Amino acid sequence: MKNKSLISIFLLAILLISGCRAQSGELAIQNAWARPASNGNNGAAYFTLENGTSSEDRLLSVTTEIADAAEVHMSMMHSNGVMSMQMQEEVAIPSGESLEFKPGGLHVMFIGLNQDLKAGDIIFLTLNFEKAGNLAIEIPVKEQ
Image (cartoon, rainbow, N blue to C red; front, top):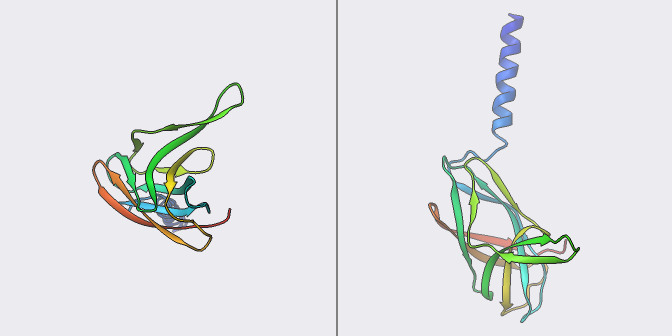
């Protein structure tokens, strides 16, 4: 009887742990936010992308009406201490994994904003994936 209780607790723990990863059968966005920025300047958005599907997918592009262009960039520090950004043609998201878009790493760059982004605003993006197609998301503008 004691062994059955231990086995039940162990199985429950496994279920709880596995529930913490994206297993919904779809792509999901968590913890989205964008920095405040002024019209005519550039801006950035960040989020965690969770791939709950059974196969790898690729983020191919991002579109929005708030800027002339939206691109996925990777920030990187060079050996000489200079920070730079490189546009990413696509970003792979392995099955069952999460990918964090964050300051100093991957992020969505808005080039040529056509409006101010003020704390409390909500902006809209469409993420275009190789397999999942388009995913429309809302992103709050926040001071961080």
